[in-house]
Image (cartoon, rainbow, N blue to C red; front, side):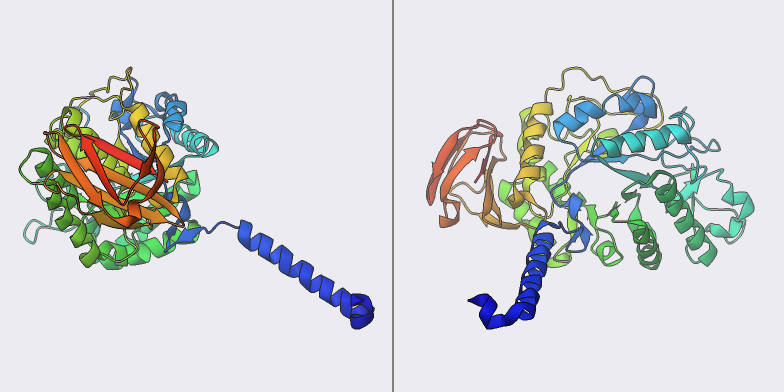
Length: 456
């Protein structure tokens, strides 16, 4: 009947159009977006693991670190952030080995870690195993004997009397760069492009990013993104970095509040203040790196073994992994846990062997990867309870998937009732693997520093 009504030519056209539509629909349906809300899609349910190469192994080299890749992959680590890989200045050096952040040459490898070939081989291995790789970048200052001090002294902020390059803050081993000089801006961008070309890294973590002008970052990041779908993390807790092109910034304010809650100085509900700040002061789609430790906090402030000691660490770690906008960080040794500070200027090797927290992190990272409700852009409803002074609870949701998080952020046992129809449903508790049928009015009993994570 169709052939008689349409004619052979018309039927052929109809079938071709139908086939084209089907192929297009299938292609569209199968294609995964490369960006979401302007960010690399791969980071939205991802995570970051900070690698302190110097302290990671007795050898302190790229090759020695590579032996840990299978373990980190099994734990669920996705993005590896390597602290600065560049040579360290010797002039005015602090301690025996100097600061990682006193760079002597932006386009060379720290010989302590290995060679350029070693680095390229490591990145290649990481990529083959499914990791993403970002590198720490120090754009605000160089070390005290960077060769630019001789070849381009005008690249530096100079004393008006002596015309000598000045140190930023009290960092006497560093010299402050002057971004009023267009040639410096071009040279810095070229140096960053060097590593994208030479080793095909996936982005940068930029040290003290807010000390570098927004105009530079806007120009720089636009050029870097021509090389690929890179991720940019700025070390600062300020909103304007997002407008300059950064994907994520630090949650220093949130972390400071977490430390106060951990000490019992503030109630659990005090965290609402920091999340309200995120909602009112930052762009809607801003990503934020939540953490319980990093190299600065560990070295100078005893995180996390001093700031969130013992059992108090776990609920805050759960929070960093499950709140809205979060791209969570794990620092080298936290999975052990290594309960000591790592020296900044000396060799101070992490002792691995027990991996007592690895299973804990593995469960959280696997849930982040598998449940869309923990994607950075998923919604979050703050749930009030009958014990808000102790209990911090919230529901994440996206595309029909849900994750309910209930945290006791106190040193005393807590009993709390949540009354919200949104939590209703059959769910599985992450750490016990128990199946539960959650009601609209649900009671929870949590031990000191206890936590529950339900997925459904």
